[in-house]
Image (cartoon, rainbow, N blue to C red; front, side, top):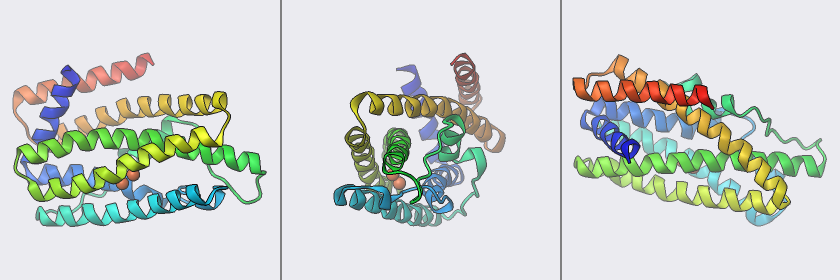
Length: 235
Ligand SMILES: [Fe+2]
Ligand SMILES: [Fe+2]
């Protein structure tokens, strides 16, 4: 409950000023762009069923479209995009905390390709789940503050992210025996949970360095960042 209230306040603060709003849209956009900068995302060829292949191809093209959507939204706020790289890209943060190689190649055995594909889809599932939750908060903040244009595009992206969340989970369970699927999902669930704490604390600290907010909010954010760092250290 407390975390939910802090997140609500955080997103309200972010959308209040076009500069901070563009910054957070740049963070979302960086995650959408990561697949285009990677050579191991969306290995549709590795799917044995035409249905899964089509879902992965659709997913890849959705994310390309989302990059353009966020670019336009930032432009309409009259802002320029912040260049985001390294651990400020949520996908990179997750990969840093999940030491699993999901690169599949055509030289690998069928079983290895299937396992790697399952790992990629499990990675995508937990990533998409977190993005979707974050967009929930962001969308509500946009609506509360009358940022209707951004709210409209975030709502459209959100619908796609929900689809990505569900088909990826179903595919992992379909690709692997139940016990193996559970093991793979646990690895990615734990990695994403660690990455979420590290990434969120990092972004809160970045916000406090770059932008102004009220003293009371700054205090809440500083305490939140400390608590997230302490939780991460305790994991
Ligand atoms: Fe997306
Ligand atoms: Fe997505």
